[in-house]
Image 1 (cartoon, rainbow, N blue to C red):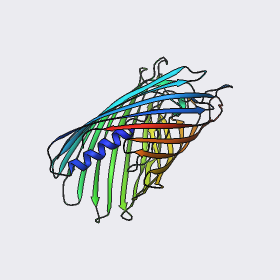
Image 2 (tube, rainbow, N blue to C red; image 1 turned 120 degrees about the horizontal axis):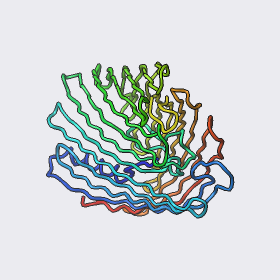
Image 3 (cartoon, rainbow, N blue to C red; image 1 turned 90 degrees about the vertical axis):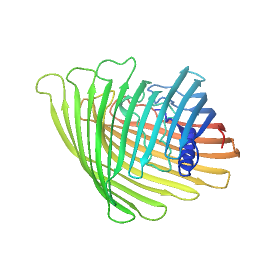
Image 4 (cartoon, rainbow, N blue to C red; image 1 turned 180 degrees about the vertical axis):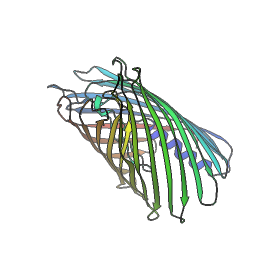
Length: 395
């Protein structure tokens, strides 16, 4: 999986938020980040076999263009990465882009539209937990396809709005469609996932909100009569524990109606669904611990119950030196019992040194492994040194 946006997106959003808060004229803010990486992995694609280790050289280019007004933003980002391996694997290309549009029409109503395209190789060695100080860490790797060096093409369109209906109440509505394609795989792997969510939150104090949310979505595979309809009602709770700590909870049930080709194969699965995140945003560090249980599509085994725990931490050691660490444990369980459970573990840690305002260097280490059903593979232990040149637009 390729994590899109990176520094370019983070910088663009930060500039958007800063600029949007000020009554200034519209701004156009271009930027481009270029990163060069030299690394080594014992099993970069978590493949089966022996003699899998190799060195690698990678170049990652992330352009971004932001259009900012006092009441909205438009952020366009791109990402292209070329990986050249010393032996065994040749090269891979990963690429994608996002378009994020947000607009506040009045103090009570705001809306968004988000488009995304991503083409990446599942299980590649830089497949790490997404690093975001303001949100729980996530890793959307299709666990069942790790080790097959399978390319995944994802096309996504989402839209939604928030409406303040009263001094303490807000209604949120969003929905969209995600198309997932796996070039070269047979029927039953590609899927279309479409649906939506309606949520109501009520402030019981200045720091705490409670609410209800209901999501309905359908996962349709490219075989006639093969689909899953998921309904997920939950209750929600969020509170600010302190000026730097926030807790978000959601708990409910997931009802999956699974339709399989042929008579008498349909079934219904009911189980717990929810998520929790505990996050801290300090002056010099960020921490986020999260857990979730959801139902998602997979390129192998149909719809799956996905259990995940993630952790992110970063710390400024000095004004120019920072450390970060990320970890996730993900379990995929086929709802149709077509395959057994599979678990994926990913751990990463690194140091980054800011040399100048526009140039930084870093070092990273990682460990990844897959357990459970399927062919046994050797763990991947690897690391890299990297250098990033950041060319921001006009301030």
